[in-house]
Each structure stands twice: as structure tokens, then as C-alpha cells.
Length: 610
Image (cartoon, rainbow, N blue to C red; front, side, top):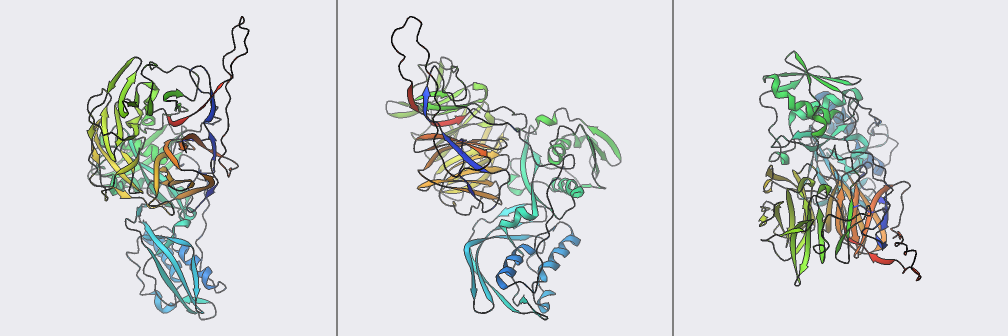
């Protein structure tokens, strides 16, 4: 969810665009009329991936550290854990990176050192304070393997991360300084340095229905010249999506397709030259993948594809609508519960919901444009789910007693996902009986405690046994079968103690930890980049929900009071509830009595529309 002030971040692995959390409580809000006025103060930036050849790349290209005779052994270890950064996609650049790493080894160890496949990096997270000197020349480092970065730019998270220690053994180098006298078992890269040497870049693939694009993530080496950036992205597209998306995205181009020549970006036009054994018609849909992967800039009007020397201009008239979140430029409406009544927080206006139906509400979800309301109400001491609008409501059957989270799939009023007693259920917008989804592929028998669905409606984040998982949402249009093969998303400190999750970006999640003090973190869906926020305010976060934006918006409750989080500069270090006073209506001219003081209420269970 979104709250107005954010705790200052303790960044273990940076997520770009995360500054401070400014949290403003929605408690103490004064009620008048039919709504609660809470000024948002948000500047809408819009949703879009990083710039490609049609935009501007602004990163610098820092060189990985090199061996130096002047460095002491702890500095040598730190530098060694960054020295492997580079481009492993091509043989020549990979050899350069390997040569740099080998310079830290004694000369007699270099030629026969073959760390793993030599085409991927093993990313490790050092334990804070876990580097100690041992004896006169050794350094012991405590670290956890969190995943690998392969030659296709994919970060593959480790599913059973284990903390271990490794002893770096040094000996004197000829001419001065120290060299490693034991070959390390892998090409290690400190995960905290990933964003220093690589650019996080979304790439896009069609869902099974070919109705919208699904986001995947790649890491492009900054060592790659900026003019080569787009060429590499096209190569990534042609190599296909990450394995975990296989069940939710359409098959890649059949046959054999490869890029020839360089991409040409000329103002409003991008030219891509391909060699293939497929007919040209197969590439109309591919043009939309190119458009969103290479550049979301409105300046790009044409993508010209040359396929087997036959050139044609791709129709981009619909491409701008192929990304689910791209056309969602609204500032989302916010709602909350006040004394069991679903109430607007954004504007003062009546809901299209009869007051008799809007009572005893303990949880809610509002479909886009308020087309339908999902209301969990307490009836005779038990929770029941209703779909309602105006003066009509339909009771949903087939659900357990404990109903803890609701979410409209794709934001529309077609399918509602419900978390009840640790299981996921799907409910059609027309009502009827809920259907349990197959989540048996989760590697734990513990109940699901939180979930969030990406705007593309094909990826789902789940928390079970306190751990975070990502999986494909296996569906055909509105028919949902269950989840695909999940993978565990590694976190640094909040791992095994999570309470809530939401999507704040197409490739970024926000999670809340269970602790005596407020704990939030933002993390990429693969777990590669992470930023944590610490705060001294006591209390546990619950009812976390989010809205994809730049920056993402987050709503959550702390001890039964709703908050909204925004990106704020400069960052604030405390969460301070702020009262928003809304005057009550003035008395009629003939009234002699003074107006009664405004009613002070507490907002809980705040949510976004859609």
C-alpha cells in the first residue's frame, strides 16, 4: 500500500528510484459528508522501462578493480569480489573479465583455473561485519550464495541459500604485494555491486493469449558500449524468457531467428535487421516486444523490421496499449474502512453502493472505475464475501471462514482472487461459488499468508512460511488453473519473517517484515536488487497493498491505522501520523446553535482502486 512518508532506507542492494518513505497516517481524519479528504501531494510520472536506443542512457561505466601491490589483504578481498564484473555474453569480453580476476591469483595458479562454466557469475552476499583477518596473511569471509548471473543477463536465485565461510589465503607476490595462493571455487561477485556494474532492464514477452506483454528482467553490463545496449536487448528477446515464465508466456518465434547488423536508431525511427526461416507475418507481434523493450518513448513512431532483406514498417498503433500498466496513467482512487463502512479517501463523493449494503465491512476490494465492490462483511459473527454495486449484492459460496486478502485480477471486475484460510480461490465477477486454485507446487505445506498479482495478470507473488515466492499464474483468459513452478526470492534480513507483499513496479515488489518495529523493503522480482527501510516506530505492519507507478505507491496498516507511502526527497527518517482536518457542513442560516465539532475517526484497511 502507499503511505505518505517513508522511513530512511538501509540499502543492502539498491533498487533504483527508492528514496525515503514519507508516511502520513490516515488516522485522526475528520469525517464530513460522504468522504474523507486526504490530500495526496503526488506528482504523476508514469510507468515505463529504462531507456533503450530510442531514449538516452545516462549511466557511467566504472571499471572493475584491478590487483594492486599497494592494497592490504582485506582490500584485496573486497576488490576480488568485484573484479569478475563484466560482459560474459561474448567470448572476447568474457576473456577480458577472466584475465582481470586471475591477476589476483599467484601466476602458477592462473592457467589451470576453471571456475565453473566460466560463463556465469556466482553472486554472494557478505554478512555485515563478517570479514576477519586470520593469522598474518589470511582473511575469512562469511557469505551466502544468493544466485547466478548467466550470459543471457538473467539472475537465477539460489533456492536453498546457505551461509558459509571461505578463507582467502595470501602469499607474497614477486615484486611486492600479496597474491591468492588458493584457487577460489567460483567466479564470485558481491551482489551489493551488481547495480554498480550492470543496468537493470525489463524485456517483454507475450502472454499465452497474446493479449498483453509480460515483464522479464535482464542485467546489461555497463561495460557494453551504450550504442550496443539495444543490440544486446534484441539478442535477449530472441533467446527467450526466463524458465519460470514458460507456462504463462507464448512460445517464442519458432524456427531459427538471429539479429544481423546493428540496430539503427534515427530520431523517431528504429531499424532492426533479422535473419530467419519464418515468414514476415510472424513478426508483427514481435515489433511490440521490440517497442517496449527498446524504448517506451513517445518520440519513437516507427519500428522498421528487415526480415530476410524484406523491409516493412511495423504497425505501432496498438503497441502502446500492449503493456498492461502503460495506459494506466490515473492517480488511483483510495478507499478505507471507517467504522465498518467503505469510504472514499481521495475525493468527497458518494459511492455507487447502497448504504444498507455498506455496513459491517472488514475487508474490501474495488474494481477499476468502481464497476464492482468486493466486500467481506461480518454476518452473525462470521465473515461472508459479497459482490455488490448500487442496491444489488451477491453472496459468494464455497469459501472458508477466514478471509484475509482480496484482489481483482487485471484490476477489472471479471475475476476476484481471495485468500482464505491459507488457500487461494477464484471468484467470477458474476458471483456464484468460489473455486480453489492449485498451489501444490509451492515447496511448503504451510498456508499462504499474503499474495499480490502483477499488472500483467500472469505473475503472482506469494508469502508462505514467512518466505517470498514468485510464480506464473496459469490461466487462459479468465479461466485460472493455479500457479506454475515457483521459485523462492532471496532477501537479506527479512527472509523467513514476511507478512505482506505488493507490486510497486512491473519488476519490483514491496514486502513487509514481522517485527516489533516497522520494517519495509523493496526488491526486484528475482531478488537481485534490494533496499530496506528501518524505522524506530514500534508496531507491526498489516494489510499491505500497492499500486504500480513511478514511484510506486504503498498502503499499509500499523496497529490498525492506515498509512500511505510515497517517494520523498529529502528522505524522512520517522513515521509521523498527520491529522487532515475537513470542516463539517455549516449550519443553516436560521440555526442558532453552534455547529457540533467534527467527528474524529480512524481509517483502517486502506486500499487502491483496481
